[in-house]
Image (cartoon, rainbow, N blue to C red; front, side, top):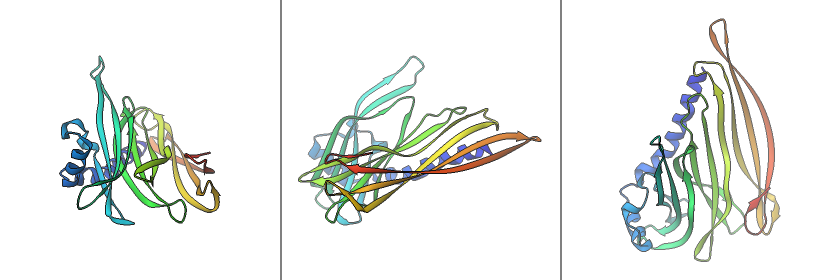
Length: 248
């Protein structure tokens, strides 16, 4: 049962991240945007490129471009790399860049590997005039006895001709634990739901209520059967906007 749970968890990550990546690989929009940025296709990580039409502005597409910055192999031939981030909103037809965010060495992949990037166009309404979109990054370590994976969310809003990051890599899901690779072990899964608090504003932006569901899993052998026991707890946090970004 424990082995099945872990396998399904990793399959879920791959399934949610993959469609946006695959659909974007041969994008003509991508080529137009790269030309404006002065980037060549070989300078970016093609597998992590994603784009998604904004449902609230259907002539515009949000794009994430990962520029290769540094790549290394250690003595065990394990790879690590750093990526610069370009977060773009472009016109669907012309490809013209309308808004841009850039950050050097925004993402690092090493023992905790960067496994996927997706664009989240959920209803992040921060005030009557401002709706954010999200960039989710997923990570996993690949260890069988000590599995770990987590997902971070950053939120971006339009500001003049740029994009401003107002939530920085907030962890919205994490799973980890230790087991004997057969049955016995303990794990913890934390899943966060973000709720817009329209009754609470700071610096003209709605607060964010974070509701966490915490699941603790314990697997043990009982009469040669692997028995799984789950316990559930909940917690709530609030993030407030300080004029620059959301913080606790």
